[in-house]
Length: 50
Image (tube, rainbow, N blue to C red; front, side, top):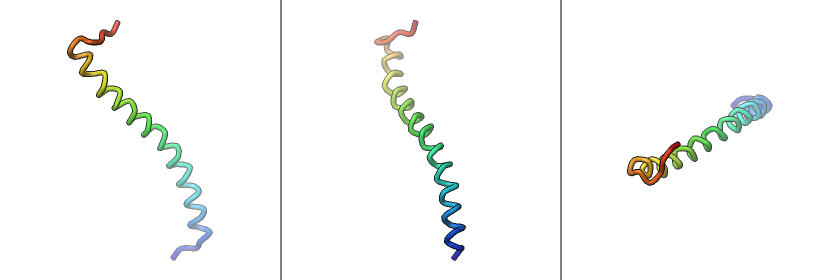
């Protein structure tokens, strides 16, 4: 087992990286859902882009 202090420092370092990664992943998921909703309407002419 590694030293508990090393584990704690590693956890703190990785936690900040994972938090920064979480927001873009959620945004990507939302945009994917939005595309899935809009694309069929664009394809059959219900919505126009001007």
